[in-house]
Amino acid sequence: MLGYAVQRLLMTVPVMGVVALIVFSLLYLTPGDPAQVLAGDTAVLEFETTVDDKYVNGVDIIRINDQGKIVEFRVMIRPLQAVNAVHAQMRSMLQKLSEPGTSH
Image (cartoon, rainbow, N blue to C red):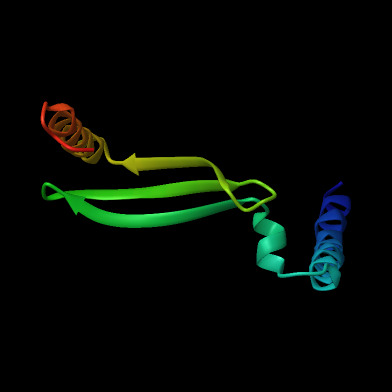
């Protein structure tokens, strides 16, 4: 029983090698930029900044259509203190924009 398990474990090495060879060969033979092929219609951008002396770490997730136009834009940030700081600044800016006499 132990011999069979060891034999199966040793067989995973050549199998993984063959799988890696096939994947890299397909990427090499695929026309265009491999990064574009893998990414498809989505880009993910990571960012770090500070807001009101709070550390902010986040990602922008941007999805485009066939014409290259942005069809979806998501922003995810963390930690919770950063979310609260960004929320407070957004509320302040929106209140200023909605005040009478403010040009848009």
